[in-house]
Image (cartoon, rainbow over all chains, first blue to last red; front, top):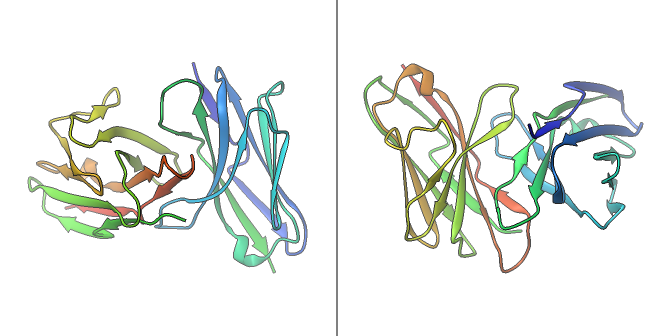
Length: 113
Length: 116
């Protein structure tokens, strides 16, 4: 069966360090993968999208890698700040005509001052 | 980025009553909107895909008579939880995609439904 795993339910790191979150998937052939941020009681906010033919994408302090051989994406936040504390969700969009995204369960990141 | 507005942000209703949640795309036209449900510390689970001018497509296990979806215009989709029960209490989120601009999805703020 298809599965998306974000293998850390919670991650605590010290301010200034780099946070690395992992998203693994099985039985998918995603056309692209996305990362979202979700704060408590709020809807997800889009951060980055990476396509299957891209290895890496950057946006300010954020970096996403996509390894379709390993079926894994890594999401990095460099120089982390307490304001980065939130739940981060990865989502896959499969190849073909389907339009909906399928989400992982998220990793709750806490950046300690 | 595009803006999706969801209303209300929270609602408390009595068991047996119906509740309507609205989802509007404010600065783009959305031929397709999606409705999700999220339980605490869990992933967003797709409930249904709302198509403008046609019937919604429901995911397996989602009761279409319980969760009525109407997508009457290119900027508005509504989800009505009919005859709500306490087990329907959850966080409901809509999303829409601006197909003319990008492939990322934009989400509403979510609606916290509590059925008492």
